[in-house]
Image (cartoon, rainbow, N blue to C red; front, side):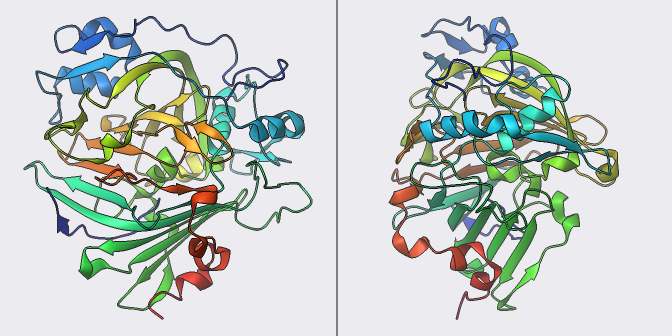
Length: 438
């Protein structure tokens, strides 16, 4: 889900383990939900429910920035629906979590050792509780193979302060190569290549025509910086992207490179994370394919806030962590802090408030993960599907990303992926990137 250096050009209208000895991630008792299903939150009463909102959501209600919610906005609260993590992932947690170790890096960061699969820290406690929650998020359950299918694509749009909306569509393939926990896959210390990538993301622009075939590949590792490559049609070859591009805008959007991978794609050993709270928070996670239709019927324009016809909010048990770069990496880094609200059951990021280096609120990020059926795993919050908004409070721009098409098609997962895309060499290696247009 990385996008390197493109210009937008097309305008267009966990823990629930069967073994009781492993508890929910986050430690302690789950937060208590206190908003009755059926409650409607409006401009007139939102202050009553502010304690269940991230700071960024409160800022949108307050209306003190360019982006604000309309006077007739309505959030309908429904029941909280949790889904158990896949049995295979829970079994891997039970089998391997006790052997995971924390080590200190030369620059003062943290890194895990002897991790195989499952949740590395099912009962995160101090010391380093916040970082352990971040590691759980990094190694959360994810389908081992994800792709756009014959009728689906990924859409990335940007809206300026004049309400002009420009979009690109992309083909994508995401693959987990190590730490596999899906049923029918294996991941053991013996067959994991310690030097090889753990996860890869491939994408290629389909529209507009003048950007077609522009592609990228990101390769993530356990203990070394990720590799980012960009293929440009003019050069007809892939080039490696400098690590300094972490703070460049992606595809002309308001997302930075470290905002991808469904909410955070920075190398976690370069960051410190402080645990702030465990609390119930309003979030959207159980919703349908209507969200992919970017219309007045489904969204409040121009802020593109979800309307209640498809968006039923619920109180999610949430771990709040404050993520900041280590001093060795802070110089020139785009964000001073990233306050992340992560689901305590599935570990997915639900919402993020992003601050500039002067610690001023800069961007408000509804990550927008979508619960859906994953073959062999049941309904999962971390399904690769999402419809997300990021509001840039400084520039008055906002960005919208959807894996659901207006017609309702979504990513193919695991066994659903067309056979031609189940190709490790083609979509998970640099040699495949250089085969484009040949």
